[in-house]
Length: 268
Image (cartoon, rainbow, N blue to C red; front, top):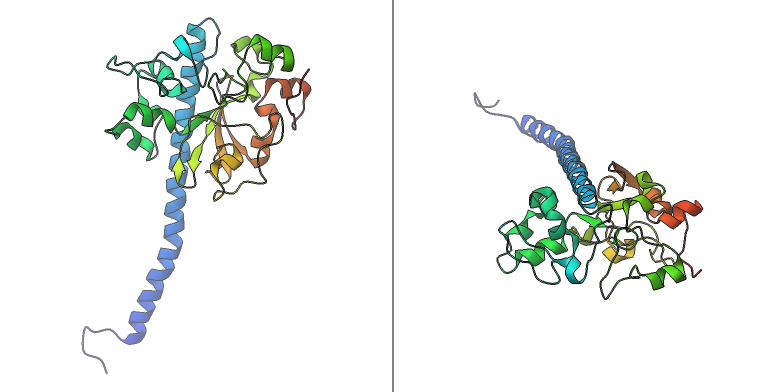
């Protein structure tokens, strides 16, 4: 016999089992909902980003904003008009910011906003880790000292028009990646550039592994069910799986022209 109002051991065990079962079901469901919300926010941000990128091109007679600029082309300032120094000004975020009305939350979001609160140098921090990295080698151009290949008449004479520097040069803008989900490390969301699977050689090592160094997959992050958010040059946003993101026709105008998913840049 038990005291009135008390619970037997069997009843307590039953309650614990029910709570455990409910938790086992609800925690993954909640995690999935959070991930879906993050994906939705990133897709929305990608649409704003590519719209701003195309507005910048329109403002410059079709010339595409470089992912990494040099010299006078790297001039940038923040919303207060404060000039931004090198190398923060060379990376795309602050040079694209005016076309986003300086809404940096369109560039840094989903918990990545901490870069905007960096009291040491938020200009630098925000420039390094935007959630979406840019296809700097093949779109707009990388004019940095560590560039794969700087777009120039000399490079074009050797390798052809490998980099799309004007909007009208893209033969398949709806297939050409400008921005995609990026990461700096295993637990570091965001990086200003992404690198293609192939360049002069194959450079991605094996399949997608979130625990591998970010550089092993070109800093691309397949963080949404093994898919990445990708903003294309025609202005639309897509989700690409591993096969899609490895297809060089999404990276290079020359690869698209040759209809070659395994394209490698070669001397002409």
